[in-house]
Amino acid sequence: MCGIVGYIGDQQVYPILIKGLKRLEYRGYDSAGIAIFDQEIALHKCKGKVADLEAHAKNGSVSGTIGIGHTRWATHGLPNDVNAHPHFSDSKSIVMIHNGIIENYSALRKMLEKRGYAFRSETDSEVLLNLIEDVQKKEKVELDQAVRIALHEVVGAYAIVLFSKENPDRLIAAKKGSPLVIGVGEGEYFLASDATPIVEYTRNVVYLEDEEIAVIDRAQGLNIINIKNQKITPYLQEVELQLEELEKGGYEHFMLKEIYEQPRSIADSMRGRISVDGTTVALGGIKDYEQKLINARRIIMVACGTSWHAGLVGEYLFEDLARIPVEVEYASEFRYRNPVIYEDDVVIAISQSGETADTLAAIEMAKSKGATIIGICNVVGSSIARATHAGSYTHAGPEIGVASTKAFTAQVTVLTLMALSIGHKKGTLPTQRYQQLIRDLEQIPSKIEKVLKQNDKIKQLSDKFFQATNFLYLGRGYSFPVALEGALKLKEISYIHAEGYPAAEMKHGPIALIDEQMPVVVIAPKASFYEKVVSNIQEIKARKGIVIGVVSEGDKTVSEIADHIIEVPHTDEVLMPLISSVPLQLLSYHIALLRDCNVDQPRNLAKSVTVE
Ligand code: AGP
Image 1 (tube, helix red, strand yellow):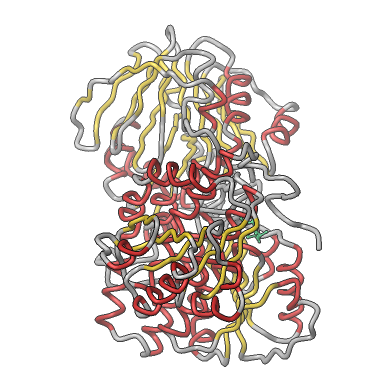
Image 2 (tube, helix red, strand yellow):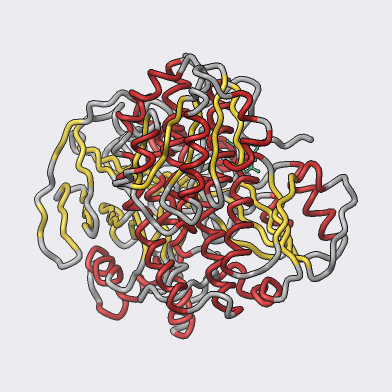
């Protein structure tokens, strides 16, 4: 997700844009830019942070009282000067910023190129801008009407702000799926992705709704129409939240915000990768390497920490759906143990930051031995993304909390899409089950919304266990990696020792730990081994252990024997990790809070481990 700002009024716009972008840098920070009008459009943009933009702009013209600004979280096109926003239209008469993903940008770009449009960047945003310019030329309409007509052609999410040199007394804004707030001052207007950059000037805001278009004119003020050209009455509200809270979107911590973002981030990781009729998966980033995956002798997942747990889910997915042997390697071990690697091996490197030193080194080692490297990263243009032959970004947006949450579920979503696509292409996944799983996958965001509604119940449960000194997490099959991830989440933010284990393995040692003090979280959804997990729970209860069961809604069996249960919506067991990991994120979050731990920046940890 990116940060966008705009202003029209009597003040000099440059300081307002720069300060606003700095307030929004938590939303994205790989490149930044501004466009200001004073006799002509002055556009300054560069790779890097807003501070780099300031250095870049100081030699240019920054005077003017209308302008737009953007701090980028790359989704299409590397983070560099050319792909930074704002973008000029082909004729350079319109300038625009965009936050979102235009799913059908490729088809639109081909159409516009046939009409003679040339593109300077690799971004989907520039495609949308030239579509608007094309409509304005063809229909001979005002810019706001050109925006309205063009948006009928667009599939995807957008929050855009634009203006033209033909009418520099008017800002146009539109949104669908990405946020856009309009601050209403005395004869001046502020636009931003959220209220953070606005509240120091005015607390009076209008939240633009999906498929609405705002026309902000020096003389006529704010007018809103919708995509059907119907006039909308602006609904003015007062912002209550304080600045610091706003940066966290009203949540107490980035980690909680990112846990709650998962319905959107999972939807974004699927966006543009499932056909509109919902019957086909298509991952553009690996299409030239799909045959390598189909013919792979073996897939080697390489990662660290939570990303390693996502790789473990990937092992179950690829072996189950695509019948390809999979090994999951800790990057730090893999890079040094002189592994046997064949040229028909495919390495899938998983990394949220794309900068983890061990994972990067493991990739280089595997590449030197001839393996094909596919990446699954969250940061576009990161070192790991650039070191791979191909890959798919997770599109989860910046993950600020050190404990990875939405990145994990986005990684698992991308791995699921890959395994579905490869399995079906290989013929190991029958069409009926393939399409059923696609339908089930599209339901996951709404099912996670239901899990999030249990936050208060999970918080109450945390009250009972925050003083525990040890936890055990157990799961079978697809729930085993979730047990490991749940234990890591608890460990890294509450500093309670926790261990994840295959449920059946408990009898081979850990059962000796079970007593009245030991909380045991058992992930026990209705799945292939449900009855066996029930037996494991009975073994724990026979030794006076305390069982917290994560179960499918309506479960009757575990609910009878466990001490506490957290019910989650049911889905196919293949997709269950996406759902069952969420209550464990909330459980660790609330326990850590009760222990007065620094949830977003736990002791000894860093968000990206760029050293060995
Ligand atoms: C996850 O909660 C941890 N912060 C950590 O294990 C992390 O997953 C690991 O360092 C790998 O980071 P990456 O995904 O950026 O490569």
